[in-house]
Image 1 (cartoon, helix red, strand yellow):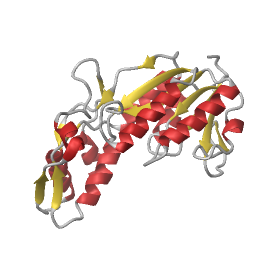
Image 2 (cartoon, helix red, strand yellow):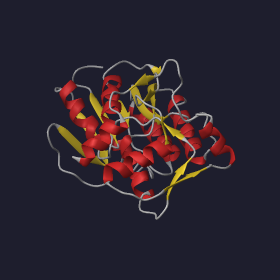
Image 3 (cartoon, one colour):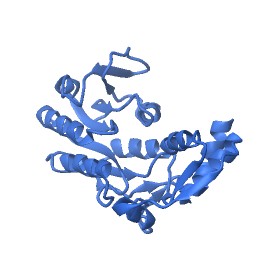
Length: 257
């Protein structure tokens, strides 16, 4: 990749993208950065915005014109496989050299529909014929916080029998920038947080940080998904994984401040 080759970032306006963009500009100040957005936005700080919709494919071909590397961060509750398919089709036509994709730990192992969608998105990337790099990461602290904050509004706060290994979005952003500026590396080491927590740990620490005294009810998750969570299928492997430095407790302290 040459110093003036364009990087296209999808999902650049989301939780992860908002951390990736300034790091990318700092690490490669002379490299053009383009962000694909569903709505029009003014160019700012060396970043240009182009309008397109990955779910329908509209505008994606134009967004990819002259792009060398795609940093694919866009994701949602559903349709990520469709999005990846549209991106790959347009990227092949545009002659993109490298796709960097963020996925989730357990995409190939968790028996749940959303994880199956993530696996299908992975397969769209890996089967594209374009050189690729893929990082599977644990759930972000932000996502866990959003989930627990909703549960904490209930009179009796549920604590399903599962373990989590949440990672700080800034640690993930830093790793993705390194990968986007490097050569294609295939499936790299999974990235999780520095600690494993039970959901009971997470819920009680959140309630403590917010001063809530609501009671907590432990729950056993049923079915194949419950069994997978109890077996830790959603956790990073004990060997070979990378770990971020910011804990859930540190994240909560920052939010409280």
